[in-house]
Length: 316
Image 1: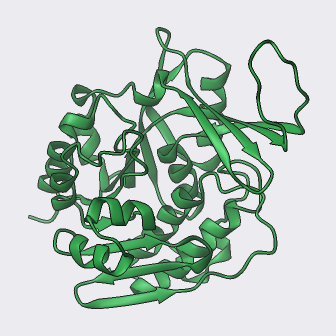
Image 2 (image 1 turned 180 degrees about the vertical axis):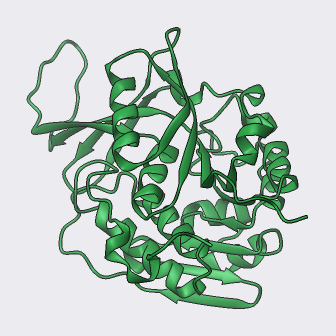
Protein backbone atom coordinates (compact mmCIF):
# COMPACT_ATOMS: atom_id res chain seq x y z
CA UNK A 1 0.00 0.00 0.00
CA UNK A 2 1.32 3.44 -0.95
CA UNK A 3 1.77 5.77 2.00
CA UNK A 4 -0.37 8.90 1.85
CA UNK A 5 1.57 12.15 1.51
CA UNK A 6 2.54 13.19 5.05
CA UNK A 7 1.85 16.59 6.52
CA UNK A 8 5.57 17.51 6.57
CA UNK A 9 8.54 16.94 4.29
CA UNK A 10 10.82 16.96 7.36
CA UNK A 11 10.28 16.58 11.07
CA UNK A 12 12.88 17.11 13.77
CA UNK A 13 13.19 17.04 17.56
CA UNK A 14 14.06 20.39 19.12
CA UNK A 15 17.04 21.21 21.32
CA UNK A 16 15.54 24.62 22.08
CA UNK A 17 17.86 27.28 23.45
CA UNK A 18 19.19 30.75 22.78
CA UNK A 19 22.78 31.70 22.09
CA UNK A 20 24.38 34.63 23.88
CA UNK A 21 27.57 35.47 21.97
CA UNK A 22 29.99 37.70 23.87
CA UNK A 23 32.84 39.23 21.88
CA UNK A 24 35.80 39.33 24.24
CA UNK A 25 38.30 40.74 21.78
CA UNK A 26 41.65 40.00 23.42
CA UNK A 27 40.19 40.03 26.94
CA UNK A 28 40.45 36.91 29.08
CA UNK A 29 37.84 36.57 31.87
CA UNK A 30 39.31 36.83 35.39
CA UNK A 31 37.76 35.74 38.66
CA UNK A 32 38.16 37.61 41.93
CA UNK A 33 35.37 40.09 41.15
CA UNK A 34 37.39 41.73 38.39
CA UNK A 35 35.17 43.77 36.06
CA UNK A 36 36.29 44.01 32.42
CA UNK A 37 35.00 45.59 29.23
CA UNK A 38 34.00 43.42 26.27
CA UNK A 39 33.67 44.49 22.63
CA UNK A 40 30.07 43.48 21.95
CA UNK A 41 27.37 40.86 22.50
CA UNK A 42 24.62 39.27 20.42
CA UNK A 43 21.54 37.27 21.44
CA UNK A 44 19.80 34.90 19.03
CA UNK A 45 17.89 31.64 18.85
CA UNK A 46 20.22 28.64 18.96
CA UNK A 47 19.88 24.89 18.97
CA UNK A 48 20.98 22.72 16.06
CA UNK A 49 17.50 21.35 15.34
CA UNK A 50 15.93 24.81 15.53
CA UNK A 51 18.48 26.39 13.19
CA UNK A 52 18.15 23.42 10.85
CA UNK A 53 14.35 23.69 10.86
CA UNK A 54 14.44 27.39 9.96
CA UNK A 55 16.80 26.81 7.04
CA UNK A 56 14.80 23.83 5.75
CA UNK A 57 11.58 25.87 5.82
CA UNK A 58 13.25 28.78 4.06
CA UNK A 59 14.25 26.36 1.31
CA UNK A 60 10.61 25.53 0.67
CA UNK A 61 10.20 22.37 2.75
CA UNK A 62 7.22 21.75 5.04
CA UNK A 63 8.82 21.40 8.48
CA UNK A 64 7.40 20.28 11.84
CA UNK A 65 9.34 20.46 15.09
CA UNK A 66 8.64 18.80 18.46
CA UNK A 67 9.99 19.89 21.82
CA UNK A 68 9.58 22.29 24.72
CA UNK A 69 10.41 25.89 25.52
CA UNK A 70 10.21 27.71 28.81
CA UNK A 71 7.48 30.24 29.54
CA UNK A 72 10.00 33.09 29.35
CA UNK A 73 11.38 35.72 27.01
CA UNK A 74 13.94 33.31 25.57
CA UNK A 75 11.20 30.80 24.77
CA UNK A 76 9.24 33.57 23.03
CA UNK A 77 12.31 34.34 20.91
CA UNK A 78 12.65 30.70 19.86
CA UNK A 79 8.98 30.44 18.90
CA UNK A 80 9.09 33.74 17.02
CA UNK A 81 12.14 32.81 14.96
CA UNK A 82 10.73 29.39 14.04
CA UNK A 83 7.35 30.82 13.04
CA UNK A 84 8.94 33.69 11.07
CA UNK A 85 10.81 31.09 9.04
CA UNK A 86 7.70 29.06 8.31
CA UNK A 87 8.24 26.16 10.74
CA UNK A 88 5.09 24.55 12.17
CA UNK A 89 5.38 24.80 15.97
CA UNK A 90 2.14 23.04 16.95
CA UNK A 91 4.24 20.23 18.51
CA UNK A 92 6.34 22.69 20.57
CA UNK A 93 5.03 22.87 24.14
CA UNK A 94 5.44 25.93 26.36
CA UNK A 95 6.35 24.40 29.74
CA UNK A 96 6.04 26.68 32.78
CA UNK A 97 8.21 24.33 34.83
CA UNK A 98 11.22 24.92 32.55
CA UNK A 99 13.68 27.64 31.72
CA UNK A 100 14.60 27.87 28.04
CA UNK A 101 18.10 26.53 27.40
CA UNK A 102 21.01 28.95 27.16
CA UNK A 103 24.41 28.73 25.51
CA UNK A 104 26.96 31.41 26.37
CA UNK A 105 29.77 31.65 23.82
CA UNK A 106 32.85 33.63 24.86
CA UNK A 107 34.34 34.59 21.49
CA UNK A 108 37.97 35.70 21.16
CA UNK A 109 39.72 37.52 18.34
CA UNK A 110 40.76 34.96 15.74
CA UNK A 111 37.63 32.84 15.92
CA UNK A 112 38.25 30.68 18.99
CA UNK A 113 35.47 30.44 21.56
CA UNK A 114 34.51 28.78 24.83
CA UNK A 115 30.90 27.69 25.29
CA UNK A 116 28.96 27.36 28.56
CA UNK A 117 25.58 25.63 28.32
CA UNK A 118 22.53 25.52 30.58
CA UNK A 119 20.24 22.65 29.60
CA UNK A 120 16.68 23.52 30.61
CA UNK A 121 14.46 23.03 27.58
CA UNK A 122 17.43 22.01 25.41
CA UNK A 123 17.31 18.42 26.67
CA UNK A 124 13.71 18.29 27.93
CA UNK A 125 12.29 15.83 25.40
CA UNK A 126 11.61 12.28 26.60
CA UNK A 127 10.98 8.99 24.74
CA UNK A 128 7.27 9.07 25.58
CA UNK A 129 7.00 12.44 23.80
CA UNK A 130 7.90 10.87 20.45
CA UNK A 131 4.56 9.43 19.41
CA UNK A 132 3.75 7.47 16.28
CA UNK A 133 1.37 10.31 15.43
CA UNK A 134 4.29 12.74 15.31
CA UNK A 135 6.59 10.38 13.43
CA UNK A 136 3.88 9.52 10.90
CA UNK A 137 3.36 13.22 10.18
CA UNK A 138 6.72 13.40 8.37
CA UNK A 139 8.25 12.06 5.20
CA UNK A 140 11.78 12.40 6.60
CA UNK A 141 13.20 12.59 10.14
CA UNK A 142 16.34 14.63 10.74
CA UNK A 143 17.82 13.94 14.17
CA UNK A 144 20.64 16.04 15.63
CA UNK A 145 22.22 17.03 18.95
CA UNK A 146 22.47 13.29 19.61
CA UNK A 147 24.62 13.67 22.73
CA UNK A 148 22.97 16.82 24.09
CA UNK A 149 19.46 15.33 24.01
CA UNK A 150 20.37 13.34 27.12
CA UNK A 151 16.88 12.14 28.01
CA UNK A 152 16.41 10.69 24.54
CA UNK A 153 19.91 9.22 24.26
CA UNK A 154 19.12 5.69 25.51
CA UNK A 155 16.08 5.46 23.23
CA UNK A 156 17.48 7.23 20.16
CA UNK A 157 18.36 4.14 18.06
CA UNK A 158 14.92 2.62 18.70
CA UNK A 159 13.26 5.91 17.78
CA UNK A 160 15.11 6.06 14.48
CA UNK A 161 14.25 2.44 13.72
CA UNK A 162 10.60 3.16 14.50
CA UNK A 163 10.64 6.06 12.06
CA UNK A 164 11.97 3.71 9.37
CA UNK A 165 9.24 1.17 10.14
CA UNK A 166 6.66 3.92 9.67
CA UNK A 167 8.03 4.67 6.21
CA UNK A 168 10.26 7.70 6.85
CA UNK A 169 13.77 8.21 5.60
CA UNK A 170 16.22 9.26 8.31
CA UNK A 171 19.24 11.55 8.54
CA UNK A 172 21.56 11.91 11.53
CA UNK A 173 23.96 14.62 12.62
CA UNK A 174 25.31 13.72 16.04
CA UNK A 175 27.12 17.02 16.57
CA UNK A 176 29.92 16.96 19.14
CA UNK A 177 30.01 14.64 22.15
CA UNK A 178 30.92 16.78 25.20
CA UNK A 179 32.04 13.64 27.06
CA UNK A 180 34.38 12.67 24.24
CA UNK A 181 33.42 8.98 24.42
CA UNK A 182 31.33 8.77 21.21
CA UNK A 183 29.28 5.97 22.73
CA UNK A 184 25.54 6.17 23.43
CA UNK A 185 24.83 3.29 21.02
CA UNK A 186 25.62 5.61 18.13
CA UNK A 187 26.61 2.67 15.92
CA UNK A 188 23.07 1.32 16.29
CA UNK A 189 21.68 4.72 15.38
CA UNK A 190 23.82 4.77 12.24
CA UNK A 191 22.32 1.47 11.15
CA UNK A 192 18.90 3.16 11.06
CA UNK A 193 20.07 6.21 9.09
CA UNK A 194 19.92 6.82 5.34
CA UNK A 195 22.25 9.82 5.55
CA UNK A 196 24.94 10.74 8.10
CA UNK A 197 26.21 14.35 8.15
CA UNK A 198 29.26 14.70 10.44
CA UNK A 199 32.12 17.17 10.26
CA UNK A 200 35.65 15.82 9.80
CA UNK A 201 36.44 15.45 13.50
CA UNK A 202 33.12 13.74 14.23
CA UNK A 203 33.54 11.41 11.25
CA UNK A 204 36.97 10.28 12.41
CA UNK A 205 35.88 9.87 16.04
CA UNK A 206 32.77 7.83 15.23
CA UNK A 207 34.40 5.99 12.34
CA UNK A 208 37.39 5.08 14.53
CA UNK A 209 39.84 6.32 11.89
CA UNK A 210 42.80 8.69 11.69
CA UNK A 211 41.85 10.30 8.38
CA UNK A 212 38.64 11.25 6.60
CA UNK A 213 38.94 8.72 3.78
CA UNK A 214 39.28 5.82 6.21
CA UNK A 215 36.43 7.23 8.29
CA UNK A 216 34.23 7.43 5.20
CA UNK A 217 34.91 3.81 4.35
CA UNK A 218 34.08 2.69 7.89
CA UNK A 219 30.91 4.77 8.10
CA UNK A 220 29.66 3.70 4.67
CA UNK A 221 29.60 0.12 5.90
CA UNK A 222 26.66 1.24 8.06
CA UNK A 223 25.04 4.19 6.25
CA UNK A 224 24.15 4.44 2.53
CA UNK A 225 25.17 8.11 2.20
CA UNK A 226 27.78 9.93 4.31
CA UNK A 227 28.37 13.66 3.89
CA UNK A 228 31.48 15.02 5.62
CA UNK A 229 31.57 18.77 6.22
CA UNK A 230 35.08 20.14 5.69
CA UNK A 231 34.61 23.84 6.39
CA UNK A 232 36.43 26.10 3.94
CA UNK A 233 37.30 23.03 1.82
CA UNK A 234 33.64 22.26 1.17
CA UNK A 235 32.33 18.72 1.57
CA UNK A 236 33.01 15.11 0.68
CA UNK A 237 30.05 12.88 -0.16
CA UNK A 238 30.34 9.10 -0.09
CA UNK A 239 27.81 6.59 -1.42
CA UNK A 240 28.99 3.02 -1.99
CA UNK A 241 32.29 3.33 -3.86
CA UNK A 242 31.46 6.82 -5.11
CA UNK A 243 33.29 9.83 -3.67
CA UNK A 244 32.31 13.37 -4.60
CA UNK A 245 34.43 16.33 -3.46
CA UNK A 246 32.48 19.59 -3.73
CA UNK A 247 34.29 22.88 -3.14
CA UNK A 248 32.70 25.90 -1.50
CA UNK A 249 33.01 29.47 -2.69
CA UNK A 250 35.74 31.20 -0.65
CA UNK A 251 34.84 33.86 1.89
CA UNK A 252 36.93 36.92 2.61
CA UNK A 253 35.81 37.28 6.21
CA UNK A 254 33.85 35.02 8.54
CA UNK A 255 31.55 36.82 10.99
CA UNK A 256 30.89 33.65 12.99
CA UNK A 257 30.29 29.95 12.32
CA UNK A 258 27.30 29.36 14.63
CA UNK A 259 24.77 27.11 12.90
CA UNK A 260 26.73 26.74 9.65
CA UNK A 261 26.68 22.95 9.85
CA UNK A 262 22.96 22.90 10.61
CA UNK A 263 22.13 25.08 7.61
CA UNK A 264 24.42 22.85 5.53
CA UNK A 265 22.35 19.83 6.60
CA UNK A 266 19.12 21.55 5.57
CA UNK A 267 20.56 22.52 2.21
CA UNK A 268 21.70 18.98 1.47
CA UNK A 269 18.33 17.50 2.41
CA UNK A 270 16.43 20.13 0.42
CA UNK A 271 18.19 18.81 -2.66
CA UNK A 272 18.09 15.13 -1.67
CA UNK A 273 14.35 15.15 -1.01
CA UNK A 274 13.87 16.62 -4.47
CA UNK A 275 15.88 13.81 -6.04
CA UNK A 276 18.86 15.94 -7.10
CA UNK A 277 22.30 14.37 -7.72
CA UNK A 278 24.52 14.16 -4.65
CA UNK A 279 26.97 16.73 -6.04
CA UNK A 280 24.14 19.24 -6.47
CA UNK A 281 22.88 18.52 -2.94
CA UNK A 282 26.36 19.23 -1.58
CA UNK A 283 26.70 22.41 -3.64
CA UNK A 284 23.43 23.75 -2.19
CA UNK A 285 24.54 22.65 1.28
CA UNK A 286 27.88 24.43 0.94
CA UNK A 287 26.15 27.64 -0.14
CA UNK A 288 23.75 27.50 2.82
CA UNK A 289 26.51 26.82 5.33
CA UNK A 290 28.70 29.56 3.84
CA UNK A 291 25.91 32.16 3.93
CA UNK A 292 25.36 31.79 7.66
CA UNK A 293 29.02 32.61 8.34
CA UNK A 294 28.40 36.08 6.91
CA UNK A 295 25.98 37.15 9.68
CA UNK A 296 25.77 36.88 13.43
CA UNK A 297 24.04 33.85 14.93
CA UNK A 298 22.62 30.83 13.18
CA UNK A 299 19.60 32.18 11.28
CA UNK A 300 20.16 35.77 10.14
CA UNK A 301 22.24 34.85 7.08
CA UNK A 302 20.17 31.90 5.89
CA UNK A 303 19.34 31.64 2.19
CA UNK A 304 15.91 30.99 0.70
CA UNK A 305 14.72 28.75 -2.13
CA UNK A 306 14.86 31.78 -4.43
CA UNK A 307 18.66 31.41 -4.41
CA UNK A 308 18.43 27.98 -6.06
CA UNK A 309 16.34 27.53 -9.25
CA UNK A 310 16.63 23.75 -8.86
CA UNK A 311 14.64 23.95 -5.62
CA UNK A 312 11.59 25.46 -7.32
CA UNK A 313 8.41 23.55 -6.52
CA UNK A 314 7.63 21.14 -3.70
CA UNK A 315 9.75 18.18 -2.64
CA UNK A 316 8.75 14.98 -4.39
